[in-house]
Amino acid sequence: MPQMEQHDQHGIIIQTQANYLPEQSDELGNRFVFSYTITITNMGNSTAKLISRHWIITDAHNHVQEVRGQGVVGEQPLLKPNQSFEYTSGTVLTTQVGTMRGSYQMQAVDGAQFDVEIPQFVLSVPRVLH
Image (tube, rainbow, N blue to C red):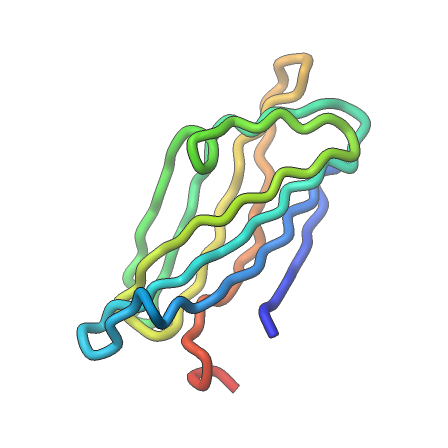
């Protein structure tokens, strides 16, 4: 069963769900492809816009990739109170297990910027972690 976690900051709740994609992976070539679905929900009282993202992706050899960029999946969603935004993206590891964590940089309607932590979640080929 995919793991889902949530974390509340500034009224922003982040839920994560990761899946292994065997049809896109090449296990003999040490290429392991994972998708992850993120749901961002604004449970606060004011509208907030997702400006950018920062990911820290770590494989089983402690090789770290850092990914920074504007928005998510080409969008900078504006979340009004009680609105959610969900997207799916992916990453490739050279090991069967890894982790992802990071943060979203958000901006409130008054211009104040704040970071929302994305809690660490595990990327794992089924049957590897028990």
